[in-house]
Length: 76
Figure (tube, rainbow, N blue to C red):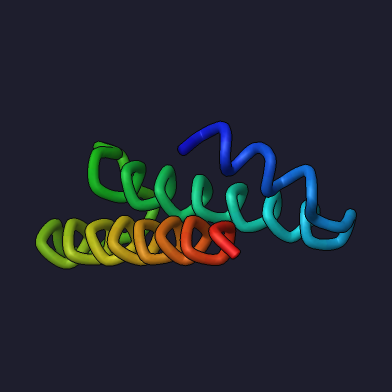
């Protein structure tokens, strides 16, 4: 599967490859941000811990949604 993805990336135009890299970058940003919000002890905003965890989980779910969109867009 990885070989097929790499071959498919090589067939893409420069613009499509840039957008793919940008999509992967934002996937990682949302994932890391969600993990930081959940596990950071000295969070700079005064948010109730339950809401902070819920927001972190929401960001992680959104990052997984973006990841599956990247995978599905890359199959074409």
